[in-house]
Image 1 (cartoon, rainbow, N blue to C red):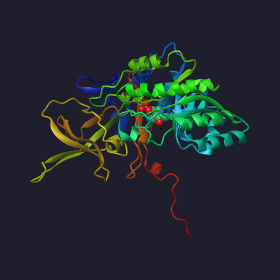
Image 2: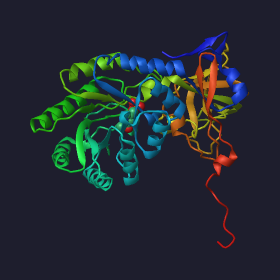
Image 3: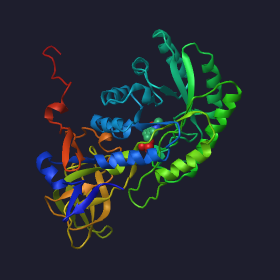
Image 4: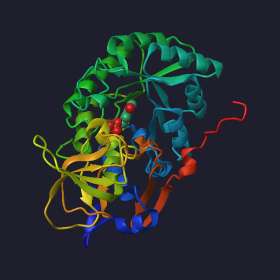
Length: 424
Ligand SMILES: *Cc1c(COP(=O)(O)O)cnc(C)c1O
């Protein structure tokens, strides 16, 4: 469910026509619906009503501080994977005690900042990271709260780049190794062992891998309990998929039901780290058609029509990176014969496409297109490749909008760079 609908043939975000926003802000442009974000968050929460839990939005999915601010108002915490994300989360008003820190490569500097801020816990992913954290906490004369991220070795049945809980993944500790590290950590002076975590992958469209992972971490939780290591937190990560094309992922309520069935009776606080499911369908990327052209083809290959737009793989990398599908709609509904086209950006790479072999209605130079479901891993993965200033972002509420990130200009592109010194 999202709030992007056609009214009088014009695509609207809530009560605002996309065309009206574009007239002021231009393209390429990310447009987010605040009603959709808050609805998705509320829906997720509903499934866990009455259960002691903390929902930490995965900041990397969509990191704009206004959106984090909106989620903070709804009571969300944050799952962060860098010092930069810690900075954003705190700026956005997310309380430190609702922040958990994940990732395989935390630096001592990042650890120091997070301890100093007073985050809820670190998801530690290696023995060496544990040692580093012990050292950093000792230097600060305090204790660091630790949850180990275990790798339950289950197949999430998703794209290989976003599968994270397989034996071949770089993430987490294998179960037996985790057990050894728990024992070691329990005797460390500057470490407080508080939890167990896992995150097996992203864009999961089935419940069964979640359940398989849960059963494994529950077994570990109980085994540790028998050893006198009592965990307060069980963090089961994020990963619920969304519908980009034909996928039929579990509804958050269905997920909650399966999770609570597996975890019932445990005396701990559950932590969830949803990202995509909260924001993916809450945002679109709006782009203008610059040119259309048709290559005639040859004896082997058919003719091909290209729709060249002003958004590119630097703005939305998911199609190039994962071969991801995003629905593309004309911002103004048009009737007419459909055509199979490639929607491509201006970047000098053949891998720069938004869609390939896609059936689109009639498209003309100057038309606006909406790349749907771009709210997660869209802007947050954008870059300046080809020296393209990054897109603007706006957040809509009812019939109002706020520019939550202004379009970058050329000075932004060279910020921090210098010409050669005279004596170089
Ligand atoms: C990316 C990530 C998430 C969020 O995943 P989604 O698929 O967006 O829900 C949660 N936890 C960790 C550790 C992650 O790396």
